[in-house]
Image (cartoon, rainbow, N blue to C red; front, side, top):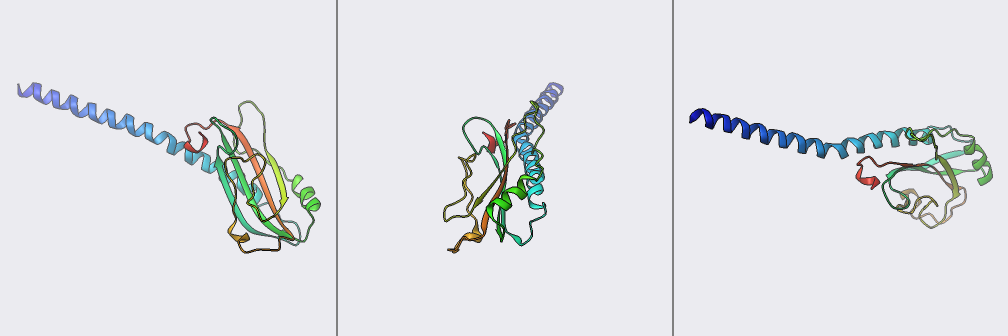
Length: 170
């Protein structure tokens, strides 16, 4: 009887341990994928933030975001935005940054690269790029500013990746 009791306790112990292990693995999948996407966002945004600035241009603030930024369904998009003050015109900044190579945030299995750059003058409204319906950017460095002369938003965007269990992409 003691032997059967010992065997039953061992089976119960290993059954509970197995359930805990499986549950822990299921919980860790979104956490692991969030970290993978955070690393992809960091690498993607770094190419904008470390790109040499044009002469007489300075960065006032930077922001990044990843998740489902446009539309519905499951998808990951990556965006990096910075506010710059520049003596350059919008056309000069556009020409300068359009020459910047923008590798994608992640490898795309279908080979389609959806990277794009947006340069817009700053206004009194939050920055909402055309491909970003689910989020907007509100910069602290622009609070209290009334003269937006020489201030520009520069943004890079890459999207249409499967969310891979990242809660931000669903």
